[in-house]
Length: 527
Ligand SMILES: Nc1ncnc2c1ncn2[C@@H]1O[C@H](COP(=O)(O)OP(=O)(O)OP(=O)(O)O)[C@@H](O)[C@H]1O
Image 1 (tube, rainbow, N blue to C red):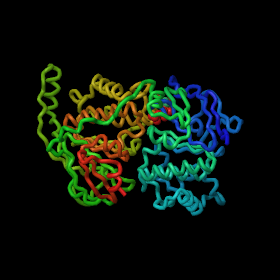
Image 2: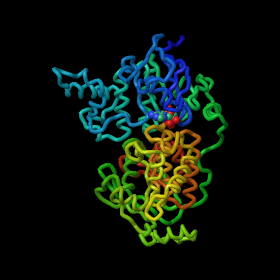
Image 3: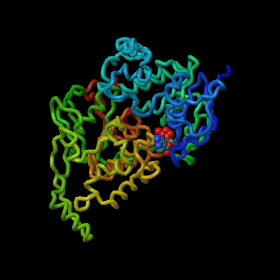
Image 4: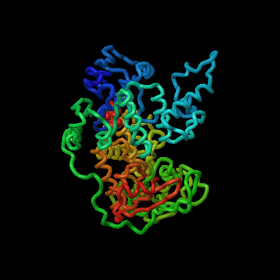
């Protein structure tokens, strides 16, 4: 049976100043299909979905629904046409309740004699959560109680409440754990089987190939190809996406060099309200993977390493080279001016990590899963975000050297291929993957020898993933201690010397790389 066309874009274009984010894209999306959208970071995927869902206005071109011109000027216009979208970034607002978040902008539906009927709103919100099988979130709670993944689930409930004809999922699966991913695949399939359309954005090619019926490839804002399921071929899609051949395995090949005896980060019998009796040593020259399902405590483990959550018992300590005294800094600067070498004292000190300040003092680098709220300063420039954690290094006689600052920022922009109009561009204006590159770049190449990276490659395209993995491997070889917290098992297996699996706030199993680890062996200890 022929599928019915739902929405049609005709030469839609979006410009931000001089940047053409989307260039004359023609796309037809049918009811009863899951359409994938793939392209490198900054290729225009979110911009297209944002135009369809009324977040951005269109610079030129037209959109038609059922043959009628559709010109949304707000997400409310899109809701009216039964189009809902899950955005890539955090789409909830702090300090409001779950129910208020779900009905933000639609409160009118609950007004009674000029007042909002809160009870009715909470009941409806709970129904929206029930509808997608969520039982551990209470609609009356303040949203601040919930973590990034739970907030994504709340956004999904909100989007589906409006019974969309078109459901847009922008790079959401990497924010979810394995069980969350399975849930969203089920939701998308149910919608498709009920004759609705889904537009699904992801960088995970196997996932797209499994879930989608058709796949549209973008490059630099241009639509390059649309393929049907029977035409899917991994190598061809990659090549169409980047315009060149991408070959081989992007994980590390060498697992023969042992890590060092020296322990740089130590967790002794640590507990919090979410973690139980964690004991862990992170060695110099080691990549330690941490894996587990949603709610297993993997993200909380990262947080205690950076002093973000208080311990109820136990200890986290870091071994780091002590910082220079003022006198030593002065001598170092004088040596620089005289082009002489300065021997940096190599004395190590043990720091107890009880706060973020302690973590910074011991030069721990951390990427939070909730990048926009906890790792980046969105209102600041690319250069400021990149150099913030390297300021010590960039100082000359107590002042930040503009030349050193420029070199550092430009170096990171080049290495990680960060797509920005200039280093002065505000981070909030970058695409999701490019923001992630900045979170990564801010800790690489400065003094941080202990790196705690939660979902480091979230939303990053395959080309840059390769660079990131190579950088992590090089740092490991230089003696850095690296913890990768990830829900992608292939990433953990492909990069880690050891993998700790967590369940219910505890470490349930530790694998060595030489144990011939496989997905199925790991999953056994997760569930
Ligand atoms: N508000 C904005 N101001 C200026 N430029 C912007 C803005 N939003 C997006 N851009 C630019 O538009 C281009 C396309 O961005 P978009 O977010 O659509 O990419 P994407 O394909 O979704 O990338 P990713 O995979 O990283 O999420 C990028 O170069 C980005 O910097």
